[in-house]
Length: 173
View 1: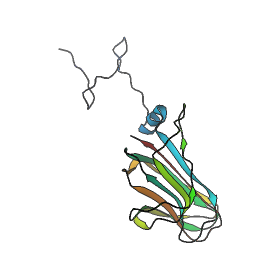
View 2: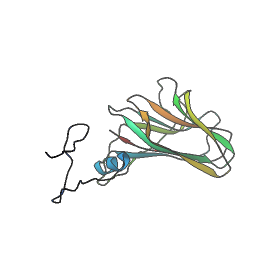
View 3: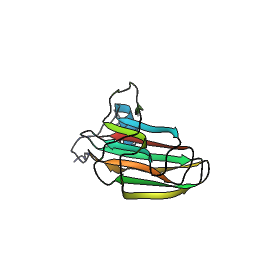
């Protein structure tokens, strides 16, 4: 009797002529980049007002957006807060052009992104962390932070720096 390996969905994995299992070893993020579904949104360095959001990213599509990582920082001591906006909002501020991380590039995205954003209200806090002067930090979510259609994530700073920045990396599935 022979043994056959099948995936969770019942598909049979690839084997070579020596009956060795072929595994790609790619992360879901890398797989998404290969098929053209990985995106990056970066707020240009800016002097934002107290109470404004460094960057807000909303999924206006029909698929889930999985956040790979968020990088944020400033030129002054402060506290970065990553949160979900509390209610539906009209995104306002400086429009951010999302970048597809794949070749060939897809040119349309399902994200709506604004830097120096003023339309959202802080909702559930996902995490907060201190930032030192001229410092930044990358928080790795590796897909654990999921934006369902209509949901958003926003990055705020408590303090009054003259220069802030933030980037969200993620993929659609």
